Length: 312
DNA sequence: TTCCAGGACATTT
DNA sequence: AAATGTCATGGA
Image (cartoon, rainbow, N blue to C red; front, top):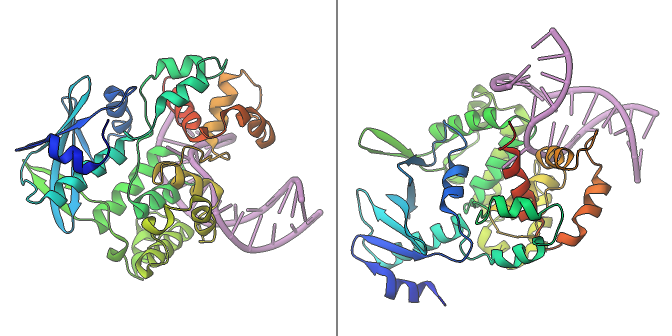
């Protein structure tokens, strides 16, 4: 049992590669599938079952390659520059751990689902699927705001424009790898720039507003992590962040398994299809339905989203 | 062409 | 308190 990243570091740091122990119920193919959803994704790149992702180590950019080396081990290698300090190694391990959700005890969710008529099949079909995280608070909030009330394809287009306009990139073998922009990289005239990229006026204002909150220090993942109830209230107090966005962020950034974006259109469609309903279920019906899954709402939603992708 | 999209907020009933 | 309107554009 791994007790700390310090232990992991001592036992797993060997030269040019990091080996991360994998928990029970982890499916790398599901990671690859999820991360391959969009052909215009700019925050990672996938080739030959390997994920390439640019990380920011306090201003130093390092490109990592993540692959599965065996049943119980994930391998991280450095394709170009290598980290030079233990702190950097630790940061990378923690990032990947958090990104892929390796700390979640999925078996508890499966215990809950094994005799559930609605979940039984779906958790078997996607066994080992974990919520892919968005560890950076600014990134998850921007992505959620972008995704409000537009189709995912267009959302990816907007995200790409946003990242390429405000973020930093790193070239390797003729390919560009991008970092999601920091809040500090946006200023007042960002609103105008975002409008030109076809963000709505409101979304442009929301994103710049969120950047201000983060820059001022009001909004900080570190400060919010210890009290998720308070974190939710703080998120909801920000313009542009409603219940769906707050819970989406709790689910993918804070890794709150009980986060529940109940108003999600995809969720509604998934339930309608799964239960053969003529109309989408009402919010009250969904609340009732989710009572037995208390504590794991985020995972139920994530699996239902996953199921949507295999229709037709 | 129509309808809807991984909502939030303002306005009206 | 609950329904309705508005944003604002692309994708199917």
